[in-house]
Image (tube, rainbow, N blue to C red; front, side, top):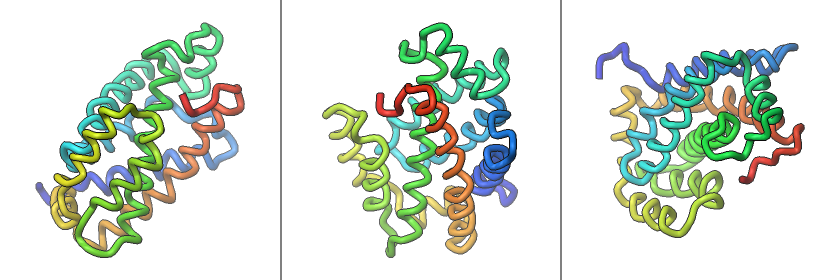
Length: 204
């Protein structure tokens, strides 16, 4: 990778901008366009994790692309959810709101993965990735996907290999991972509130 290609840095910077919006006095101004643009930056990260997260990469990319399309016709995440509520299509397969929930899980899984990487010694990503999957995705998956993910955990890159793919050294990666953890937390909370304040729940 060229030196100017720093996907981790781009991710953390994009989520800092989203964090600034949700922490402002007008959090409901969070635009579908800026949100989906930030989320597209995460997509290559799933690819770097290999076969264990192939399900996440394929599913996540498709859902983010749907939100990118939605951004052409609706301004904010709040307006997008309210439009689905009004049309009674929130839990209809492929709805923008349903896709937002799935994208939120992808964001959350990366946050937990980074948290676990930062507190785990050694070069293996198996424990951090296993914990991130268990905490965010496992409850929503059937036996077949769980089994495939468990098998894929043995094929994860090492931490050193991941950092090389991301064009970061240990120190710079820790800084960017912590930055993303801090920035993504209020964004995840904001999306949860969009659902919970409308009685939609977040576990479907």
